[in-house]
Image (tube, rainbow, N blue to C red; front, side):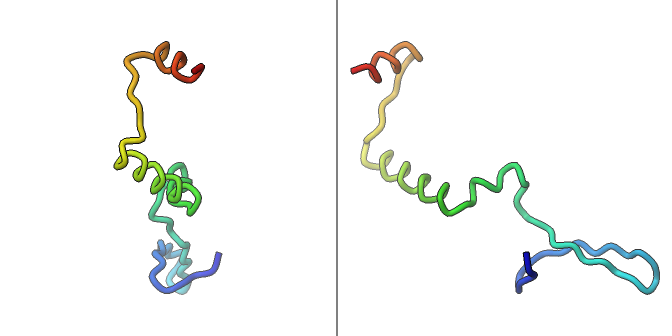
Length: 70
């Protein structure tokens, strides 16, 4: 991955004449999936469904499964 304007880096001073820069991600690797385009499209779609009332609530897993079988 190439460096770009706005990227954040960690600087490591190895000796008086050497500094190593490493690109730093501001998102934890375990959470990076959330910021992918595909996931964000799904989030927007889910929010539209919620706003339009296209959701159901169930008091139990048994009730959910019964609804799925209909």
